[in-house]
View 1 (cartoon, rainbow, N blue to C red):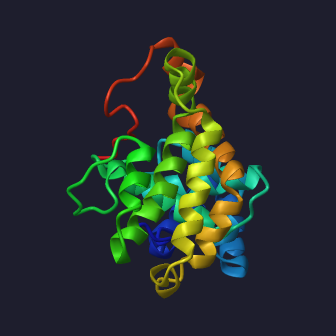
View 2: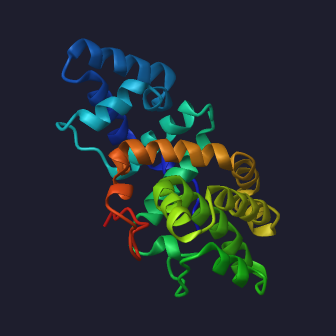
View 3: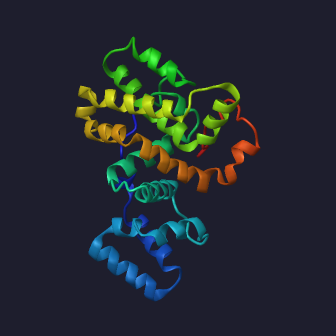
Length: 240
């Protein structure tokens, strides 16, 4: 199950990495960043646009993937007018999880069933109850956001060449999945009900924010169109 736990893993190491990145070797800038960290906390540094630029350009500081993904997602959402720390945390956790192996195709790490299409998730959902029904509902939202957010060119190419469902279909399915997941005792027990509802309401804006992130940092230059249609397993960001 995906939970918003990336930001909670940041500690002293990540704080000093942020200071070093903002300083860029300048002692005065380092002191300024340290003062800001002490007075305003780590989130003030993480939200600084200069930190995003430094992460993308500074090769002298080694940064963990979870910090990179959190900052990328946080700034993509802020650019889209979504100032919600918990949503940024959740989506960063989603990208990190789904970027490894075939996790994007499964409702949980240990689950043996793999899904290629949203309709298959929805079909199984109709016959399930209890915890697995909850996981399927959440996965319908997560998988829709993953595909439509990071691989819009792939979807658009399928629409053009095969008459496949458009991005609006993914938005509708994703919002529905999150709404259904929110309306469960499991979501309430894990404190995810409000987050799922927010994700459902904001799904188009979240999708658009991830599109910007994808175009700029993951698939720059709209390479998917020039390279043709991806094959099976192409909807992945392999993080190891």
